[in-house]
Image (cartoon, rainbow, N blue to C red; front, side, top):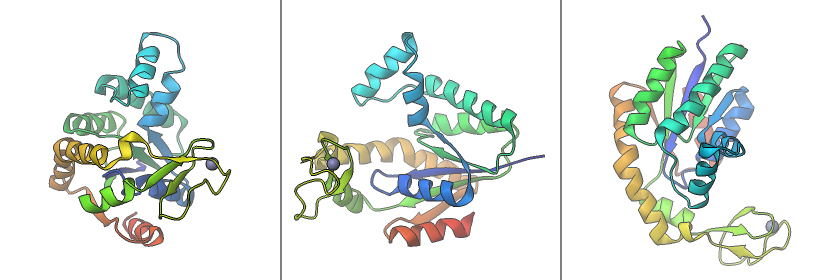
Length: 216
Ligand SMILES: [Zn+2]
């Protein structure tokens, strides 16, 4: 029976997960399930939950687990029925230990629990702070830039570059604390169940990707 490879990505902000997931998706033709995408889609529906998701996302808050998991189950169901699934990249979850248990139960239910790999893209706290506090976004085209002390305008459209309040050092430190509290137990859980693969995230993008491919 078909049992696609399930690849779960974990890592601190700034670890480069998005880039690596994108590369993997392209190279392997895997399907993708991202909590962010699912929530953005769900909030378009004008009902109680849709409106509440909009409100929470705008405030930068976290949507509660049952709401996200309903969307996850629907998406896995969709893929299960479609068939021809080579692999699935899972993005944005589990954010806490209870979500790790739930994800395992969901994969049990769909009989896709035989081949799960968890990629931890590992960087130090210092590196995370260094990378994120240099992030700037263009107010016009929203493109992300890295402030190297030279560029003052967007090189795509000439727009003004700004820093998200969240990306200032204090904001990053808060996210790192959250990571330690909520995500580290998740990492330990996958380590204890022999599914954790740690990738050194403090290398060139290509090198990180090579290391990931070796594990696939
Ligand atoms: Zn721009």
